[in-house]
Length: 450
Image 1 (cartoon, helix red, strand yellow):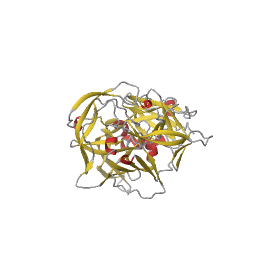
Image 2 (tube, helix red, strand yellow):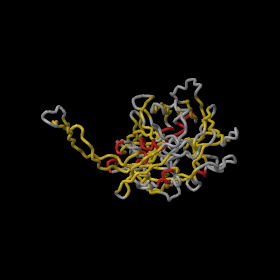
Image 3 (tube, one colour):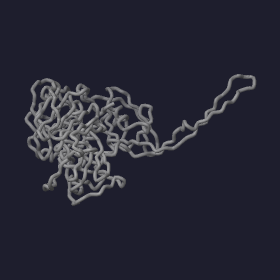
Image 4 (cartoon, one colour):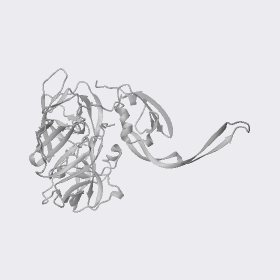
C-alpha cells in the first residue's frame, strides 16, 4: 500500500552560503554511453537511490527542490573522505537557528556509468536532521540541481525507475497524455506556473507559481496571502508538516477543489499551509505561492529537461488515486532495534504419548525451541492535539508493540502507517509499551476534511 507520510516533508532547503564558481562541474557518461536506467525506492513519495561518493555508497533523495547537494546522518561505517573542506553555517526551512556544516569541493560522485569528479557538497555536522528514522531506511543525502542540470531525466513513478539521458538525446514522441511546462529558475530551483480552484463553489482558476519539489512528500503547499486569491482555508486542522533543516515545520492541513496543470485537472488534492515563520526564507522569493510535491508528481511520469527549461508530465496509472491523509494523528518513527523472543520452527520436536494401553487415542506434545533476534522497534514521535489517538490517550514516546493484533516487529514502518490512511471509522487497536508496562488503546479514524 502506498501511503503519504506528511512528517517526511524535507521540501526546499535554503542555503545562505554564496559559493563562487569552482570550474567545470558536470555529470557525464563513461564509455560513450548516452543512457542509463536505475531502480529506486519510493518511500512516502520520496525517490531514494544509491550514489557512490568518493568510493562510498550512500543513499540519496532526488530532490528537485534543492540547489545544493547536502549530506547528513553519517555514521562511522558511512565515513567518507572529504576534499577541500571549509566550515560554514546553513539555514533552511524551520524556525530554529542555523546549523553547523562544512562545504567540501572536488568530490567524485558515481551512479553506475554516470560520474562527476568535481562535485561540491554541504555536510551537516550533527545528527539532528535525521530523515532515516522517519523513512525506515538509512538516508544520507539530498541531491537536486547538480544532477538534473547535466542530464535529461525521466522518472517513472509506476515502475520505480529513473532513466538518465545525455543532453539532447531524449526522444520526445507525440503524446496526447503529456503536458510540457516552461521552467523558471530562481536560485537553482525550478518553478512552474499552473492554476488552482480553491473552493467548491467557484470555478475560478487562481494562477500560482509553485516550486517543483520532488523532495516533498506532501501534495501541495500554498503560502497564505502570497497572492490576492490565496486566503486562509476555512476547513482545516493544525498539524506538524515536517522537519526542515532549521527545525520543525507547522501549519494547516486542508483540501481544495482542484489543481489545474495544463489539460490535467486533479480533483480535491490535500494542501498544506505552512506557518510564515517556518518558511520565512522561502517567502523572500516574492513571486512564489508554494510547492508541488511527491503526492502529485507520482501521478505522472516526469521528464526534467533543465537544458531546455521545461518539464514534461505524462499521465500515469496512479493519476486518479484518491487523496488520503493520516487520520489517526500519530507520527511514527523508527526506534532502533529490540531483542525479541521467537519460536524457532526449524528446531521444534514432538513426542507421542498413548493415553492408555487399550486406547488408540494418543497425545502429541510439541517441544518448541526459541531464539532471540534483534527486530525493528517503532515509537510515537508526535500526536496531533485533538486527534483520535490523542483523545484515546496515546502520547509521544509510546513504543508500539502491536497494531490490530499484529506484532509490529515483523512489519515495516510503511506497513504500520498504512493503517492510519484507511477509510473513516476504521477501528485501530494498539498495544503500546510505556514506562516498562503494556497498555491497550482503541480509536476510530476520523476524516476532518470531508
